[in-house]
Length: 241
Image 1 (tube, helix red, strand yellow):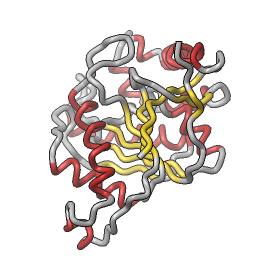
Image 2 (cartoon, rainbow, N blue to C red):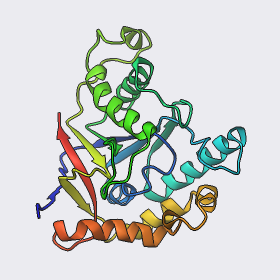
Image 3 (cartoon, rainbow, N blue to C red):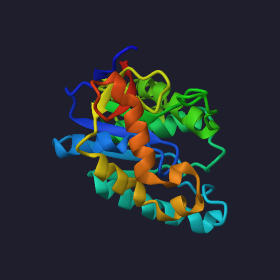
């Protein structure tokens, strides 16, 4: 069994980009809590407001609710800034509009590390991934190059967003091809509190195992432990840029 390496620590600011509220709480927030406690600056950009995520709540009502829950979730793990790009939940398309918006976010926040959620076709264990996750993650990787090239989306420069080519690492949470990990033994409680902040979303899940927050996050962390010295961990697929 291949062992997971420790995540690099030679970075100062991270931008975590995901499709929906709650995406980063399922597996990444334990690492975020540890990083912010150590003085690192972590910010979140969400492509949608998650307005199509609760079957019993119409999108016009659901979007503001989920945005508020995400703000509460961020507060639990020390996230310094949160923004929403306003793409439509459930129908996010890979394309120039998404790449432009993500490149703009990367230029605004100037991160050394970009974090995103699993964009592969499947999850660890084989479950099929959603189109929003696949399209957002792949666009994130492409937008990093766009952010550093002043001749791609030159309108961003006209808007005052100078090129940013300082991204050194990309960490993909929940990837079936994980290579690195972060010990979350001491931050698991904060990760659970962050996920628990999504009250309405969790209620809408019913008896789905993902609604049992502590048990689910412990199960995920324990899956990574045999490859990380027996320690509960958040796992990432790491790209060096």
